[in-house]
Image 1 (cartoon, helix red, strand yellow):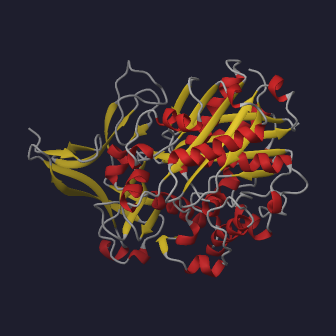
Image 2 (spheres, each protein chain N blue to C red):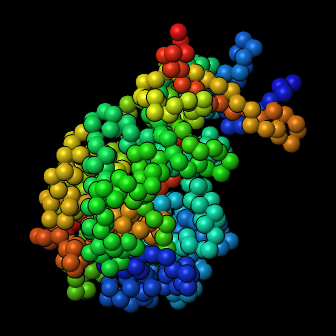
Length: 387
Length: 140
């Protein structure tokens, strides 16, 4: 395998787009990434299109990628359609990386897009509910918010996390989102507002959940010889790892622990080396559990971390400087690639008002999707290093 | 012929005349799975068939959630839990007959309840499982 570099990134603002289609959003993100990279669109040799729900929303179940790339103008090359629920975007990135690392192509594009607002809320909610095993957990009555609630509940009982600490994650991510022109929500919230908002699944309140959203993001990766003729810093993909759910025995390591451990080993770094991270805060309190599962802090220390401001912009390890899913928004297929986009902007020093200083060298993304047998169905962890 | 079908495949069986939670046990590594599996993902050996394993009727709450929203067809509040059984499996289940939900806590004992869901196209009863909490006052 040869080294792979991120050459270009681009995204749309996340939000509610009544007038724009999946194709319109995809067009904008893909061409933003092409312009950002400085390569010609005709140099892209392979493309991966990540999307989770368009089949159920518009009926375009098959060849979704070919239909959006037709709008973009990129045709004839190998195009693959990637679906891994909310981890579709990072799965497409994994494969684009593989295509270049293997030597098959010199330049590959991963594009992710989702359009959930369709004028029929029940249709959108139904689509989202299909990210579990419908025949098993679906018939058992699984509710995603309830699964998160149980994980958080258990952690509270074990380590004494407080409701205020859970709320602070939502406050932090809204503070960050307020600085991000690409975020769906740009309002700040207080701890009291978060705790007093409508209870969804105790202890998770409405302002701790991520909104439904539309948007797209794209990442172009390429080989060293392509990078060498572009005028940009070398951002190497130090590792990209994807794992899927297992049926764990009680007490065994979680999927995020397993996946991140492999990512650290492959990148040759430790969690202490990470300068900035984008993680999958589908509900804000889960971010605390992720600090521990990703090895940023020891089990039980995450509450202390949020109190001390470690993960705020300006802290020693900023997490979700974009605002995360809870503020930036979560158009499922786009999320994993939007995480990479945000990290690349920070590694290049191009993140504007929310830029992390000093400019980071090592960045980590964690993206999860779906639920099978009590575990997240697919989790991807990527580590990027500025050389 | 059996007059009922499990709503969730591979979850229910009959033991001594009663309907019980039923999983499977790997003859090689002794891991227990619920719902029952044909192949142990830990051993991936199709030469030694999995053994049917009747599971306990009583378990303990590992974690629970009281949600004010529910999937279509389910009631609010939607109380779901992970229940640890003595066979070493953690089972996802809805909780029913909770009474005062404020009394729910981790470690609380719970008992299996078989629930009638409806009928299938052949007129067979569709059955599923839930658990109900056992509060101390019930035991007296």
